[in-house]
Length: 78
Image 1 (cartoon, one colour):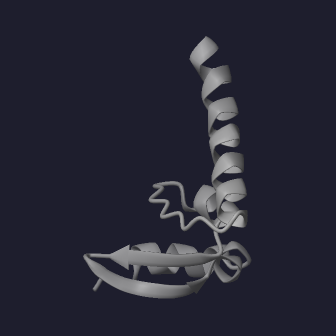
Image 2 (cartoon, rainbow, N blue to C red):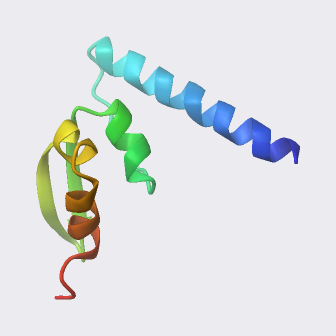
Image 3 (cartoon, rainbow, N blue to C red):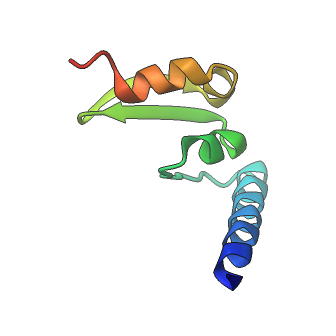
């Protein structure tokens, strides 16, 4: 039960620190399975599907279009 309370706090602190480092001019590459988390702190996003880049653009674009993000991840079955 304690782990359920600790993990979100750690994640929030980590994401805050990542954003602060980036704001200070440090290049940060964040690989995160929960795209919404990464998109919340990032400037630029790359989405890979089956080893190919299917999106290269602003994080804000994907944050504002969850359907597009879903489509990029799952594709059309090809």
